[in-house]
Length: 112
Image (cartoon, rainbow, N blue to C red; front, side, top):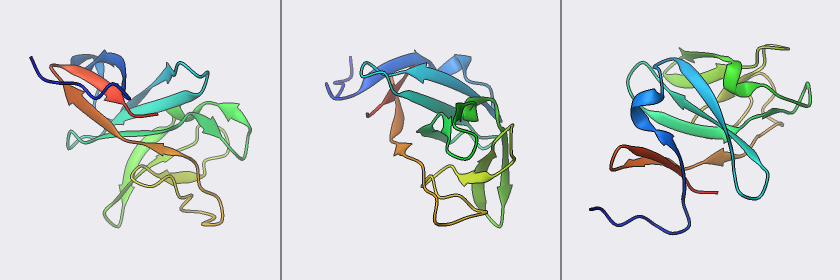
């Protein structure tokens, strides 16, 4: 068995994440995190809240890549957010929270 950092939260089985799609998870403190698996297999976590629409929808956004930067585009107003950093690619003055995500023993863990 692999040691798990007690500051992480197990959110789902890694096999349930589909490439190019997101899922939403509720953290113990009530925040929502959107978790994405890219077509290349990388995992990312961002706040699920679209700051422009003020809605919890980013987990349902479109995942893509531009110039080597993986992003999710909001399903509402289409702003794109860098999956690695949370920086809005269309307005760099806007940044959403990013969360470290990793897999331990087949479970996806998020560090709040």
